[in-house]
Length: 142
Image (cartoon, rainbow, N blue to C red; front, side, top):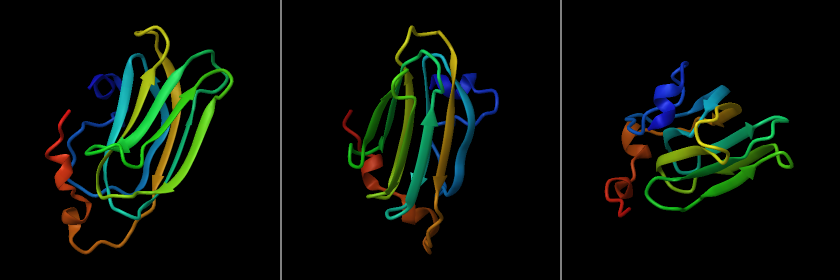
């Protein structure tokens, strides 16, 4: 994944995680030259708040948030000079691996910074990692 290796603060993460995530998961400016992604294990019913902004720049950013195993609960947006930010607030509809992906809509390799804030409210879960697993994550067809 391109974004993880170019992110000097190491906050764009690798796609494999073995923990249920909660709290502030992202809160910084992220360099995007091609694409970058965050990957989390989330629990059904968890409240998510996502804010992404490209400021007043003349760039285009395609943003996707979706379940790894399906397109259920997918959110999509295109940020540009007319729509400079997105604010999403919703509940996770199925436990499992979820991905926030940001793709440069401009000339590939032309880097700019994107402000990203993500908060996943903690939820009670008694089975640890089992609570945020989804067997569909293991058997993708794409």
